[in-house]
Length: 383
Image (cartoon, rainbow, N blue to C red; front, top):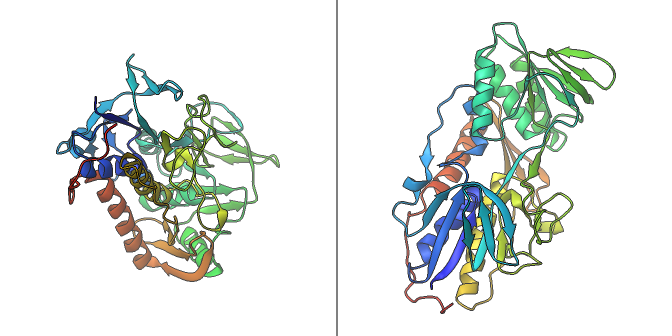
């Protein structure tokens, strides 16, 4: 029987891991199976664009991996039994494995306040973004949209909506100071962009309740809201926490620098599912940038294990943070390897072009697993 590699999740991290393994292993070396709930690869960093009506290319997973020996299974994972080396699927099947890669990702954290009605939307995935698109299209001129959360997702969503629908009254509500994690020049540029787009910024404000037509703040104000977009953070898939895997308090699987589970060496974790340590002994943040690097690292580690070699542990370092502020403006914040910002930023159209190149590059790398296909000159060790 061939060595069985099972990969759960085809986001940036999972797709890159799968592509690298498919390129570098022979069919006789291993059976590789990729499981994903949706039939398409989703460019999650573009969901705010999809929400306002822009066309995002669809990339069917079966087409992406058609030229490889990898098997794609479209189904939802319902349970992990890492001691028995088994994964249960919603369709009733059970898949067994010798090595497992968990890349089940994350989803929008639900509102931590009382919500009445159906005005709350997110941009956490394709279905959510399409639902938001429908909600925005139903709003007439002068209606109000409140984006809750002043992080990168909130900024990108608010600016995209305001640019595409200047007839709407768009507000951005943040518990902290907008741009506080940027250098002063970057924060000033973000502020100017919000002002230029007519977005009302409310800082140091906490949402306490969402009614059918308003967001009620902790100090008792009722902010008119015909539609609310909730962007206050992400939570990991709960399946890892319900398994025997060692997880952090935030639900992410604790891994070593090779992306291998510290409690179950036959399991790797990538992307938002993993709590990996980067430069300065800081945990990597949930992001496309982190997930891409983790995917490469996990694939190299698994290949090394198969060949009886020591897994390489490349330092996972950041270079920039990229923020889109609509289609014609953006900000590139240069950072140190540990993700702390330095006083170098690109703004305006240059920033927008750079962000677009980053998004295209990430999607191309994940969606083209057969690019430069290379089969090793010698097979891996026998399982």
